Image 1 (tube, rainbow, N blue to C red):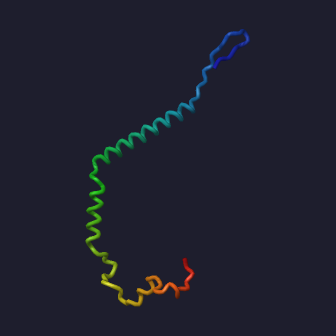
Image 2: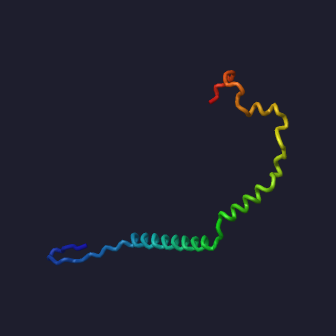
Image 3: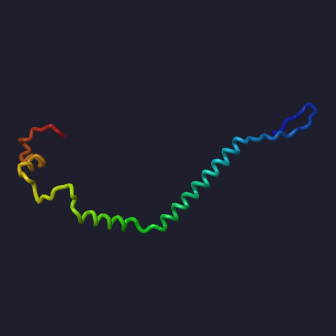
Length: 99
């Protein structure tokens, strides 16, 4: 920035904004840290084995064993209960308004 004094000479005024410089340095440091973190994460991902293979192995292992908390049944204990979970046998007689 330039300012003229009363004699006509031009003086150069240097404006220093230390807060702005500090903000820029802090933002730059944050971006460098983030890029370093992402590079480390990419290296870890490259060293890992394929996730789909591990998931398929886990899935076959889990599906092979029955759930110990659920009883093993081959069919309904009481066949009359099935009528509550099936749709109406005759749609003309059905007068329910539930959509």
